[in-house]
Image 1 (cartoon, protein in one colour):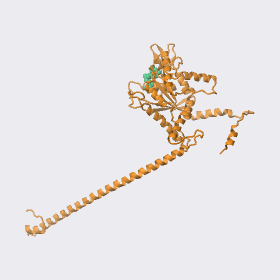
Image 2: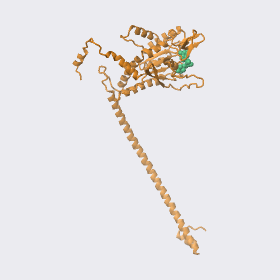
Image 3: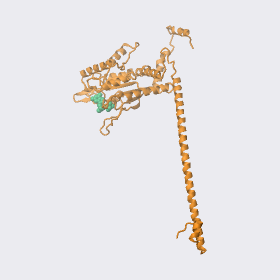
Length: 415
Ligand code: GDP
């Protein structure tokens, strides 16, 4: 292993000027080509009461009918009795760039009289996805790791104009350390501009009051002024007031736009003056998708992993990066578990054998009883047969046996 001294030597880095073109300026292109070839993958969860426009928003965001209309008259949707977790996967292609999109819906959330533990199945699902990832990381063959972790969770707030509901606060409080939370005000076209403004303030102050960490599109030192301004603009709109629509309508001027038509006019989805849909899409898809994935992996998942290992009895020293071998720990646990199973299996086998033996003894006994009865009956019949034979002989020879004689011989004699 390298000594501390040799490591110190490496750390004295000098800046050198190249004397000609070497070629690593092409590295970004190599990364780009490889990523395009491999394709991208993104998993997004939507949470909120039914009818708040979750499926419509997903359709609008990805400009596709991922969710065919739920609300047609012929097939009314059955509302679930508990919170369910349902996912849809779609392979999308835009100018040759492939995106595998997973959308996880949570029908039933917030729909009951008592929504106290609505967050629980969702948290369990998010953690189960992390466990699945952790398990794959600990395998010897780590080539084919499938990442099913939730990279973003869009939380739909009902456009009540009042404040957050208890169920909203509880959900965000329980989930904010596990997932990138992106709160949105659903169906914001049902509120006026002033109402939306006041509602946003109220929501943000509730979020602050409860120390909830929502996802804040971060910016970096190396970002240029334009990107920084754009990011500020995005952050200033959180929670995004959105309008969803996967249908085209015609404006007064005769333009065809994605929007919702009202008697007093048209609300345009893609018009930044009318709602924050564009900003949400900007952040989620165009500028921060990779960042959301990185934050999930480097911060949220890493914290979960550490908590989990600590709970398993391993204290991680922050100065020793991943010193603890989770594989070894898991292997130990697996062996312990196997040992326990073997013991249980042995005990079960013993009980089983004892039961079988008991049954066999009983069967043998009743078999013997049956045989004995059979023998008795056979003997009785044989005796009767001999009796009849004897009587027949006597009748034929014309000297029937006297009753006295028959009695003496032990034959039964009926007149
Ligand atoms: P989900 O149950 O949350 O998935 O809700 P849906 O996406 O199925 O939408 C429920 C209803 O609300 C449908 O009739 C939609 O057309 C309507 N809807 C969806 N988004 C909006 C919106 O932004 N504004 C308004 N006013 N209605 C919407």
